[in-house]
Length: 348
Image (tube, rainbow, N blue to C red; front, side, top):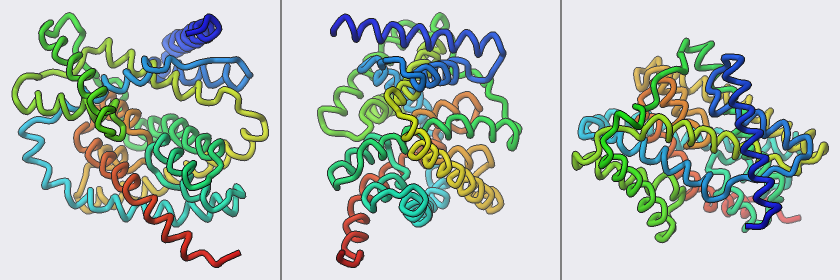
């Protein structure tokens, strides 16, 4: 690591910490998540050369993976069949998003077909950017749209949870570290590292979350793990995830802000309306409670939505099952669907 990079990272952490302090002082919600995100976002847009923490930031997602995995219990497994009806709506929901999103990005934002298609797909930001790059998309536009989707949803979703569904965001996210047995903390750490790095070795998508999730779920079902990671670890994960979103806007120009970022933000409004409609449907049909339905179908980042499920007291496993289904369907289906779409296009 160069001295310059070290200084940039230290500056980023200090700015993000200041964001936490401001949010705490003003008694704003989720200070460890929104404080770093807001502070680093504003400073990044001002042109400061901020830098993320690389592997440390990725490791934060492994904490969430363990938190999700430890919620997988025999009782949850017994409930999985009851989720099938709402999970079956996910592929249809993705198709509707694509049918609206592709024309939106082509006609409103002026994207080419490849970029518009992968910008509209509600998959993982990294996966969609990689797929789009391989297909010849404008990578800069694509990455900005998906980062904006994650960021705006992270702002909009809590507002909807509080003001529409009347949910408080103060649910305890985990016990303090002092209340957990040392041996269980060690096992959690091992599960996080083995799951993350093992997942990377076998090419698992979203390895930083899914690897620890799978390992800790097995340990939970085996009766070895009984508690979530400590509160301190989950707050640190919030801090790093929020900071990472803000830092993604380093180097964004005014033109990109006006065109690409604004277009991505406008698309999120459409996504929020769609999520609201689907939530109403699954609620009225008894397929899901309102909060779980909303968090399951709002197409934000898997890590971010898991964190919102934790702080809102929603059924974490229900939410995660739906988001995993969405990500899996998009990753497997998007490249195939795009090839079919391209073949259907008339030749120039």
